Image 1 (cartoon, one colour):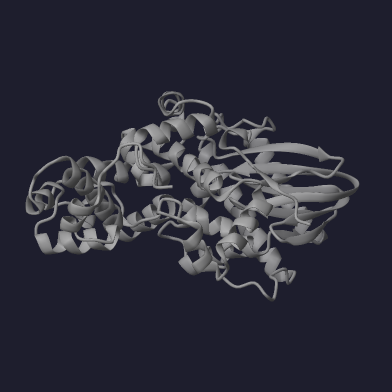
Image 2 (spheres, rainbow, N blue to C red):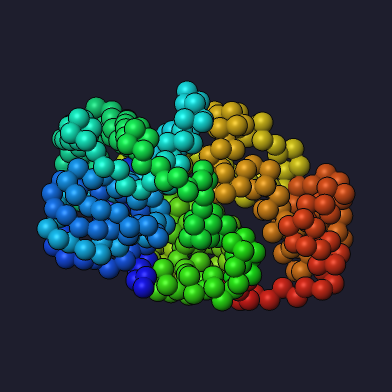
Length: 417
């Protein structure tokens, strides 16, 4: 029988939100509780024997076992035959992934690397591979130390770049070793997503059990039982937890108001965001922003910050009918392709989709709170013609602007969940 996992709160990952990574040692003498990880990590087992479940698959733990735990994987060490001693590296997966998406990187190689980590979360190293990995781990430890919350600042020149390169090298070697050791499961398919991964990727939408049932070809009750079995919580509680994790990034990297952040993560208004955020994170959104906005500049999270700055920029300028991807990308010193790749990874929507979502959200407010004509609303939110406005609005809302005004009563405090 599968054990329920506890959701790893974003504040319980031993690193501040603005850290690239941490390095620490750990000893495990008995089986652990199942845990769903919000923060990604490498576990490098150097001594001991046991067994671990990662999602639905069981793996042996022995010396020189390297495990790659990506966000929203569920782990559970079920057996400890000999005490386990391991190195733990907790890192910012989104930041490292953005480094892999640079213009000098071959996109297919990057995708294969990440897919290998997703599909094969455990790799058994031979003596030569283990020696290389030992050296890498030692280099990383020498750079950042062994305190769980190290990397608050870098004492050596170009420390951020050095640590980033070492983490990418670990990921690259992991992928090579998996392939060399035939670690890719025969039944695994590229891009295969678990229910947890799907919920994470689509959490800003109006996600329901019915939608999940359609995607995974199962009944709603089966999906609900699966989520409960894996996490110990219901679908709505899990979805809220994921949304709150994403809210922390909007608070850190943008100046968006709470109402706009609520819409961006799939909630209907600021009061619901504030309530859920305080319950899950342990402080109000305002306090969180005051605390971590001050430390986010300790090192450059360039791609991540730029993505959220662009979203912030769109929220401030959506009414400008000349707003376009080319000019915006040029303003931020990137190509349109780089901008869209960053937006898709961090915010789930490319430039055009982000802009249309923002404009439609603002149009909904105007249609319900004012008596302006549909044409006037279209112009106010940045559309040059009524046809484009109607098309985009209908696609996102499921009805025309006129039908929306007639049928929908906008109730402040009504939660779309």
